[in-house]
Length: 196
Image 1 (cartoon, rainbow, N blue to C red):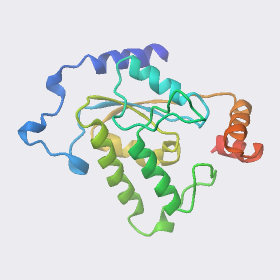
Image 2 (cartoon, rainbow, N blue to C red):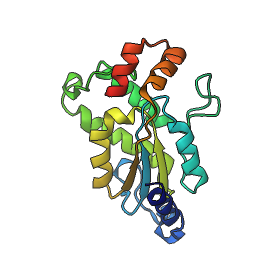
Image 3 (cartoon, rainbow, N blue to C red):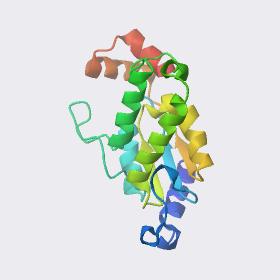
C-alpha cells in the first residue's frame, strides 16, 4: 500500500504545467469550475491518529497542502496541515445539524431543511477551489471529513477528481487517552467517536 501511494504521489506531482488550469484565459473558477483531471489524497482518519503528520509527509513527498491552514496549538504544536476554510465549514455545518466534532451520532441532513447537503457541497467546492484550483495535486486532510465522506467523496469523483483515500489507524485505546487528555472527553465518549 505504501508503494502504491508513493507511486501515486510521484505520478501526480510529475505532471506538466500544461495540465493545470490557465485562469488568464478566462477559465471558470469557484463552485462551478471543473476539477477534471485533478488528483488528490484524502486523509480520512480519527482525531489523534497521526493524520497531521501524514498530511505533512504527503506535502514533503510532492503533494500540495492548502494555502490557508489551521495553525499550531497546544494540541498539535507542529501544525494541523489542514484547510482552515473546510475546517470552519465542517464545524459550522455540524452545528447547523445539531452536532459537533466530538459527537458520535450519525448526521441527519433533514434537520437543517431541504437542500442542506447540496448547500454544504457547494460551499465545500468553493473552499476547495480557493485552496487548490491552481494546483494539480491536493492533500486534503480534515478529521471531520470522516463524517461528511459519504457526501464529499462521490462529489469529488463527479467533478473529475481522482482520489486516493488514506485511513490511518492508531490503537483506539491510545486515541481515547489522547482525547481525554487534550479535550477532557470521557473514555467512553472517545471510544464511541472512534467507532463512528
